[in-house]
Length: 101
Image (cartoon, rainbow, N blue to C red; front, side):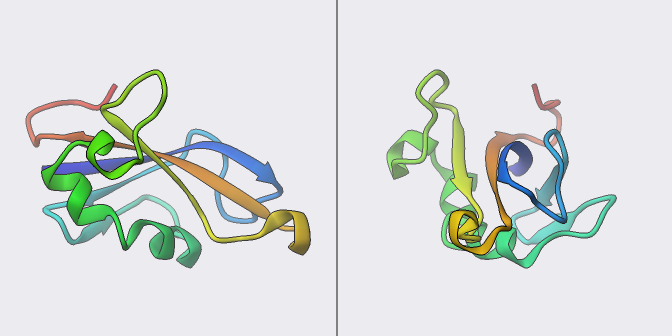
């Protein structure tokens, strides 16, 4: 299973991402992107990526309110204190033959 990670929302000002940007975690360990990725996104995803690949988001307390098949995490920038921005990521599990929605 692969994970599609989409920037769902940005609070503050993010210098790396814009809403709608997506990157992929293929085969459980390869990040694939057409643009540079922020280390904050790696740090936020790292504790969860393997569990999300093999299980459902609701089993880990990361499921969305409207769709429990998608997980939500946010980057580590404390934007209200740093004048930066925090990105909220929507993570969807897809098999190699499926296309993300």
